[in-house]
Amino acid sequence: DTLSMRSKSVPSALDQELTSINSMLSVYSETGDYGNVKVSGEILLNINYSYKTGALNILVKSCRNLAVADEKKQRTHPYVKAYLLPDKSRQSKRKTKIKSSSTNPEFNETLKYVISHTQLETRTLQLSVWHYDRFR
Image (cartoon, rainbow, N blue to C red; front, side, top):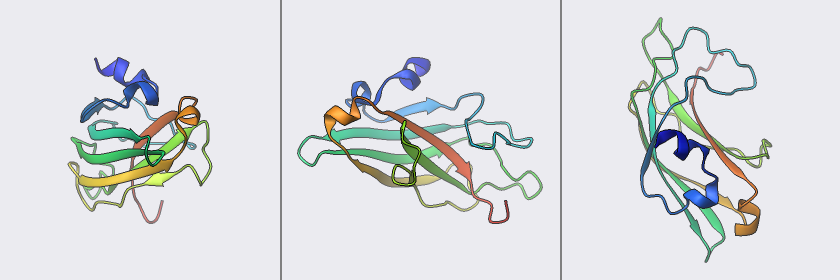
């Protein structure tokens, strides 16, 4: 069930294999301004925790059916951003590389957090897909 997957805490979702989660109808950001973009798409990822290294690894595989962010030029330059909430500091932020002009980008990148399992139990993983625009 997609809704229950979105609401699971990180430790309870650690044993999940590749998971596709539909995007929410709206996305949180500091500005809250998305212009006229209709938010859509899915993200395929794999989350695991290594007790040996004390690391949370988020493999961002790909995204599918993303909205076109720049309607005028009909393009999207997506990247995925992650935080381990409640920490929204720079040290908590992880980002993938920007993929040029794709609504179905393939990332295959691992975002890594070195954190103890007991600390991880108090955190919430926030993932969001963004459009890179050099001038905005």
